[in-house]
Length: 252
Image (cartoon, rainbow, N blue to C red):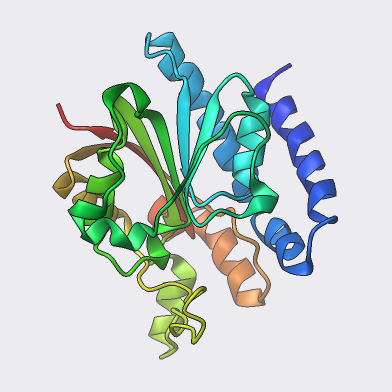
């Protein structure tokens, strides 16, 4: 079966599954389903690319499990997909998997890092829609994740684009496009969003090169202004789009 057909089938399965969950989870699927499909395709292609290069992908680590964890585990059931962070049981894949209970903000403290032997490290680490929720400096977090990665492994970052067209227009009209930090310490929202140049600089400072960087509009739009900006972004430079997917490889 073609990769696209497999992903469409998995998305239908997740759509059905989301309706069996609580309203928050169902709404989260509806808001992010295009992104989940996109990152599953990106990850599937990366696995195939690494396999063709002789890297023989065996293990993936997902930082903060969600619908993508289930989709990728079902797309490639031959791989071990482990998780780190706060475990959401409803998104825990079947089969052999390991979870590391670790507050990623504690990457600030090297003595608290998870330590893996070289045979237990990961081919791919998925770091999706997490970096903007952290108050610890990204270079400290990326250095921590790099310690869990095989020498030829890859880190995939997904995060909103701080410099999207809609954000620029909101600032132009005196509106802060970024939400306030929430009073719920378990779900504080976004501490910091990043631009393409910032992510590239932070990756380099952490010992990584940007292999690929894709700017996409995979978030839904609700207001007329958002719809106009999304259409305009299609003909403007990609840096005006709302989402970033960044593929990192370790520097030689």
